[in-house]
Every structure is written in structure tokens, then in C-alpha cells.
Image (cartoon, rainbow, N blue to C red):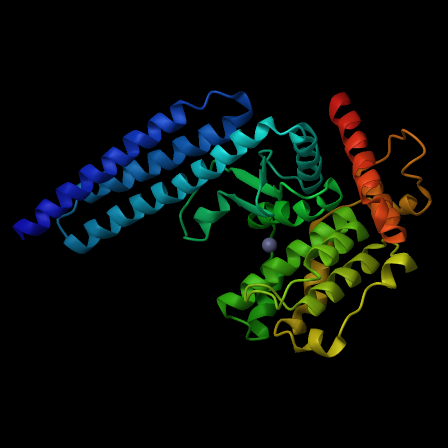
Length: 345
Ligand SMILES: [Zn+2]
């Protein structure tokens, strides 16, 4: 019993020190752009402290351990967010940062996502933030989102970031109907649920960015091997995105469909295939999007038109598919367009 008491006190000191250091980290952030991070950080520190003090009100060793573990979980997840924030701060010197910020905020607006996510030039596409705590059933009210693009990618591929932004939004979308259907189909595994979420992110991103999302996705992943377990198989994903585009009213020109090759049998083998229509229905219901097919006639290289983001990206992909050699010119045009828009916003 004595030993247990000593461990408890040592563990308490250890956690107190962690909280003290986390407070300093958060207090040192004084950029107004990062105010969402500061609010979030302070809330997590508060929660971690509460769990720590709860532990002192019980003598039950098991309960005390659980309180300490929960406190540490809050702090560990906060450390991960701080690590990502460091990367975000470091990459703000990138010459394309301003246009990435503009792209992120415009897309977040379309999704009704608040607060504005912190954009990062990272090693790949990913999203992190307060929804990570929810996956451990930890309660968070001050939301925070951080999203990364692959630093070496041309902006032509940025529609892929929309998928990551939808991950941030998912917690706020009512998917009760879809969850019912998942249960009905007995797809109750964690893996199945994750695949459904990934599919929803694909579908909503496709609604926002039109065929440019599909083309960016296919081009980026064409050379990959089989998908990781948390993703549906590639044929299913492509078929689902394509059908979402069509049901949403997006034109998918022949230049695009000609290069799309779906193995129907493989797509039907996907375990979540019974939910195919339900996922599309949910994606359409949960996003309002003004579908603009004027990209079909839009000349990317001719005018300084004030058109919407998706027209630029879809027109860019049409140019790329017609002549892949032009990738650098297309990227440059997109960059110019984004710079102009970011400057005037
Ligand atoms: Zn994803």
C-alpha cells in the first residue's frame, strides 16, 4: 500500500510538470492567426488538470490510475497537436503559404467548417485536430483543425485537401441514418466504420471540387499497391466518386471517363459495397453546392476571369489530361489565379 501511495504521488508530480510545460508552450503562442489553437490548448490543459485533481479525491487505486491515465491521454494528444503546429509555423515561410491559406479558408467556408483550419506544407495529405480526442471519447468544446498538403505537390493536386477538410467536418454531420444502415448490414467492425467515413470524405470532396478531385485522386494513387485496411478498395472508391459526381450534376467529360478504368467485380467485392447508395445519398444531403460546369468552356490560359475555385481546378485538369506535358504551365496559372484571389480577399 505504501508503495502504491509513493507511485501515485510520483505520477502526480510527473503529470503536474507536464501541465506546467504545456502551459508555457501555449502561453508562448502569440500569433492572432493561431488563437483557435490557444483556446483549444487551454481547454485541454484545464481538462487534464481536472482529472488530476479528481484523482486526489479517491483512495481507490484503480480509480486513481484511470484518472491519471485520462489526464495523460489529454496531454499526449495535445503534444501531438503542438508537434503539428510547429510544422505549420515552420512552413509559413514557404512562398506558397498565402495561397494555401486562401485555398484552405475558401474550401472550409464551403463546408461550413469553423474555426478556420491551420494549413501545413507537410509530407503528405492529412488532417488532425480536436476530432482526434473524440475518437478516444474525450470531451472537447474548443475545436481545432490542422490540415496538411504534400509540400512537393503542384497546386493542381490540392483538391485532395478537401477530403482532409471533410474529416474535420465529419463530427458535425448527422450520420444517424447511415449508422442505422451500417448496423442493418451488420458492418459493425471498426474497420468498416472507418471505410464508410473515408468514403464519405471522398464523396463530399468530389461534390465540392467536381471531377478535379477524382482525377487528382486517381493520378496520385495509380501507382500504389492495395489500399490500407481502413480504406475501401480502389475500384470501389473510384466508382463511388464517379457516381457521386453524376448524381450531383457534375459533367464528367469524355477526356476524363476515357482514362477511368473500374473493375466492377473488385468494386463489388468491397465489404461496404451494400452501402454504396446510402453513402452517396448522405454526401448529397449534407453539403449544399452550386454545381458549375462552365469549366468545360473555360480557357485557363486566356483571361483573368473571376471565376470560382472549382472551375479553375476542373479547367486545369482538363488541360492536364489533354496534354500532361503542360503540367508546369498549368500549375503556374493556378498559382497566379490563387495569388490574385488571395491578394484581393
Ligand atoms: Zn481520409
